[in-house]
Length: 232
Image 1 (tube, helix red, strand yellow):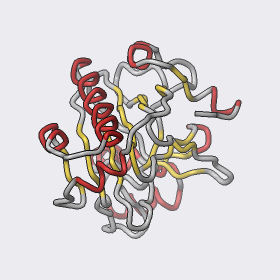
Image 2 (tube, one colour; image 1 turned 180 degrees about the vertical axis):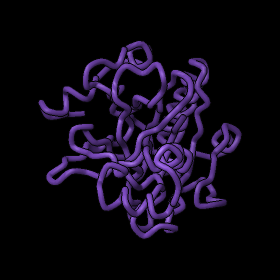
Image 3 (cartoon, helix red, strand yellow; image 1 turned 45 degrees about the horizontal axis):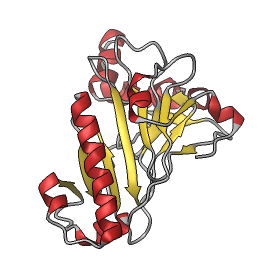
Image 4 (cartoon, one colour; image 1 turned 30 degrees about the horizontal axis):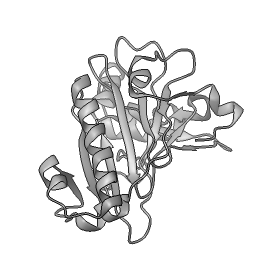
């Protein structure tokens, strides 16, 4: 994966799973990439899997039962190995076949779905891991290139009207409904695409995190194409 000099500050590049999980986030670096050029036919796996819902979780049994070519078998072994590595680390990886995520259209001025730039939050020290094996890949955004949506005056005023309570209760309201997790790109912001086959670790907002959480979003899916995503 080639990154620009400006992206090097935010992204740490490693060459093994051990480095991925043992490298500390620091400074403005809140995303770490296990840079990989994977062999195997992941498209074949996607074509053999059955989409049951817009987001279908694929079990190890589902994956193992597929009748695949040699290149399809290579791709399957890579996925199974990634699942094993993450599970042994203590994570709970989920392999998803995705048509699309559910859209949040309840408020016309504020979307809280995963297509909106957002950060993840956890009450315990953790990270978000993800790898797109096939289909459109997610984007991240440097923190200085985004603004928290709740700090944009016109959006904040509309949220206050929606809440209609005290200022102290308002801050709790923003957290309870996850409004505070979402960001808007600044003019001329330059998203960084995470690419295919790389295993990423993103910083999460938690009480022990020493860096800013990584701002990211799900991509708009390519027409007629499913995504195959490992995430935890």
